Each structure stands twice: as C-alpha cells, then as structure tokens.
Length: 450
Image 1 (cartoon, rainbow, N blue to C red):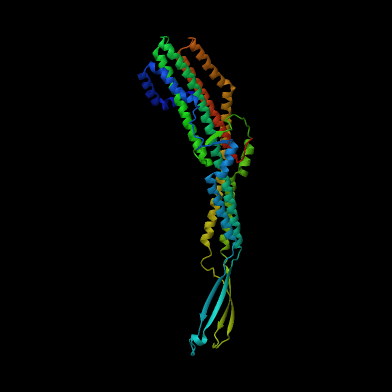
Image 2 (cartoon, rainbow, N blue to C red):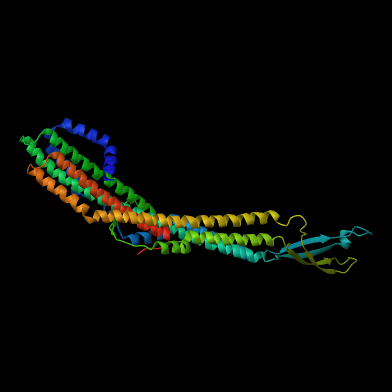
C-alpha cells in the first residue's frame, strides 16, 4: 500500500517536478545559496498567512464546541426547523371545526293579486356541518403523527450534519499533521542542500548529486504548499457549516489522536433500530398513513348539515308575520363513496411499510459496514504504533548521519527520506480513517460510542 500511495503521488506531481527541475538545472549550482533562504522563508511563519487583527479574530474550538456552535447557527438546521413549524400548523388546522354558514334571502307571492310590496318577506338561516364517523379525530391523529415525524426528521438532519462537522474538523487536523511533516522534511533537506552546496563548490560531490538533493527539497516544499491548500479547503468547509466569517481564524483544540474503542456490534444493531431518528420518522410516517386510511374509510359515511332560520313578512302579508324553520340535509352516497381515496390511502400504507422495511435493512447494513471498517482501520493504526513509525524515523536519521560521514550514497539518503515520509503520511491517513470510522459508526448507531 505504501508503494501504491507513493507512486500515485509521484505521478500526480510529475509534470510540476519536471518543470521545476528544468528551471533549476538551467539556473546552475551557483544559485543554490540564494535559493535556500527564499524557499526556507515559509518555515519561519509555519505556513500561516499574516492577518490584520483589525479585520479578523481567532475562534478557539474543541470538537464539542464546534458541534454546539453548529447546532446554534447552521442554516440547514434552521430550514429543517421550519418543517416542524409547518407540521404544527397542519396540526392546528386539523383540530378546527367547520365554520357555520349564514344565509339571508327574501320571498314574495305573485298569485291572487299578491305583489312583493304586500306579500314580501325576509328570512335568515344558519347552517352547521357536523362530521360523522370520527373524521375530525382521525385528522388530528394523522397531523399529530406528521408533527412527530417532522421532529424526528430534524433530529436525523442533526445526526447527518454533525457527522459532516466532525469530518471537516478532523480533515483540518489531518492537513495540519501533513503540513508539520512536510515542513520538517523541507527544513531537513534545506540544511542538507546548504551543506552540499558548499561541498560541491569544493569539489567533494558531483553536480548530479546536488541536483538530486535540490529536486527533493523542491518536492518537500511543494508538499508544504499542498498541505496548506488542503487545510484552507477544510477550514472553509467548517466555517460554512458553523456560519462563521471567512476572516475568522480557527484554532482547533481537539487533536487527531488514537483512542481504542471496543463496540458491541449486537448492542449497536439493536440500539440503531430503536433510537435512530430516521427509523423513528419512518415508523411515524407509517402510523400517519394508517390514520389517513381510517380517515378515508370514514368519508364513506356522509356528514350531516343542520340548519335553523326565521322568516319575517311585512305588515300587509296574508300569513303569520313570523315563521321558524329547522332543516337537516344529508348527501346520499349513491355514487361517490370515496372509493378512489380509500385505494390511494391503502397504497400509501403499503408504500410507507415498504419504506420502513427498506430503512431498517439499510440501518442494519450501515452499522455492520461501519463496524467492520472500524475494526480494520483500528488494526492498521495499531500496526503503525507497534514500532513502524519509530523505525522509519530512526532509519532516516541513521542514513543521514552515514551520508554525512561518507558511509551512504545520495540515493540511499533520498530513498530513506521518501520511505520515512510515506510511512508517516500513511499513518496519518490511517489515523484519520480510524477516527472517521468512529464517528461514522456513531452516526450509524445514532448515539455516542465510548
């Protein structure tokens, strides 16, 4: 794996290295004393761009602080909260009774010499619709499940986006580890280049050896720049998630370090199915669809409309001056008995049930995959911590000292430097992958893992 990673890196930067090498060859060995101070200058600033304190500030964040700030300020969570308020509005609407209907009209007779002036009257009426078969109760039940489902959806958004926040946080830490390694290697070869420039001028080494050292120094300098760029991209992602100004400098307090955990996969599967908010949201949606089905069946029963009114005739009217009325009206369900609505509601129940089963299967697989990935990455990190890192560092130091005494060639030194760099970079990658798998398993299980 180390050879593959190193080869991929060399291929990706091959073009830039050839160009830089050609320029250095053209400049000649006499430019080395001027080249070293210019390239070593970024090491004094540790790769940090000076920022005016008048326009910027520093935000010191632990991982928990970053998550807390995200929960307060993230715009995606704010949008998700609007969904809860919408569902609560629908719940309020479901509780409301139908409004009564008030009507006003006139009447008159046109027979036997009657006219509106001597037989006219005015009547008023109020009608109220009464829903039967528990329709209002089913609507309230459905809306209640809808609100709970929206709340569970918000919790699921928190779960997923929290993983994104933690991932961005640790990507910054990974970039900082890479940057520190690249700066260490660059400074080491800056010293080697300076010494060997003097040795070349005195004729102790060949020009090709000096060129090789110079190219390796440029390679490490390019890694410094690449690490700086990766860090800035990760910081920009974290600032956007936290809704922080781009001029704000982020100082991260939680280091990327190894902490061994031994999760119980059986318990995690059970907990994930019980507590994960997306599973709870699907269960609530299924219950809501069942309530919708009961409501659709209730619409087969027609509703009753009760009306009451009073009619008043003029002083010349032939009949009684006042009349009261009471009426009832019921639709006759001869044709429309909500057959289509019932069918749609039944399909909705079946769809929600299938979606729930799909989510349950997906959750179980997510937990299983995350657990296996965690175990593999843990094994890899512990292999590096078993002495490989120390061996890589000590080998480079030994070869460097041997080269200074003439006991090793420049090719031996360059090979040891590349091997040490590759081993340490692979360790940082493995450590980051392990930490990422930890938070991935936490996200899959829906809870923190100690």
